[in-house]
Image 1 (cartoon, rainbow, N blue to C red):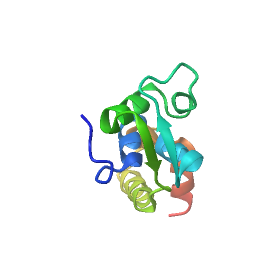
Image 2: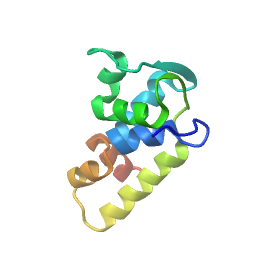
Image 3: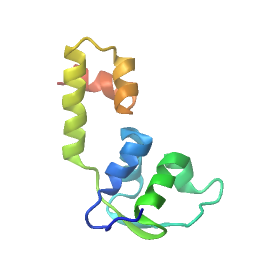
Image 4: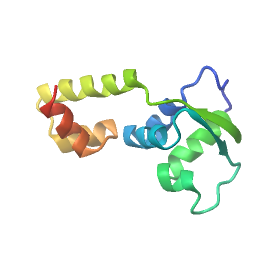
Length: 116
């Protein structure tokens, strides 16, 4: 299902399919630029290496192949993850369980617990 490229957040699609860390990695690698999303990325393609098969498949499903603008990291999304870490920590969840639930790195949970 192809969506209007203006109405769907590329990083949100990646985060949903591959986790918050995959979305952050894409923003760091290509944020503020355009990339070419091939119809069938070859093994070893940089996007497959960076995001994994599932996230790349989600991008292709959402946007189809072609040129795709990658936005800079979404600070609002990062704040939502930070808030969710606070909530789950307050409920007594372990850092490992939080990281798995949110699809982020364990270091991210520790960092945001230490600096709320």
